[in-house]
Image (cartoon, rainbow, N blue to C red; front, side, top):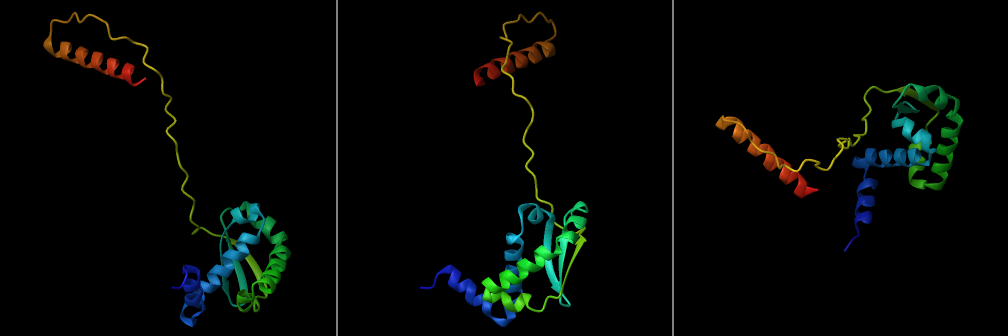
Length: 152
């Protein structure tokens, strides 16, 4: 029985799944970049012998334009180390970066910031209302106070 990685490698090596292989090589390139550049680059793609990098924020554009040589050297090293990525990266002549408006923003978890306080009231007040509606409301308030004291 074949292992999962063997099946995936055989699928990636087929000609009709060439784009999957190219995408995995581009992900390997992004993983080799320093952490601040990994966060800056939303995606890579190749078109007309040019590697394009979509940036997640305009502030990174100038910094990455100054560091194009780093990306080019990583391309050469990755094509040397990973022979399977050699054909993907061998024809790249230029590296360009642009600010993308179509990148996916990571969903951030918003925690519940409501502070939790323990109940300070005891619920031992007298109900001095003559109306039945108000008496019922005060009884519900007393029950809520007692329930909150039990929870804490």
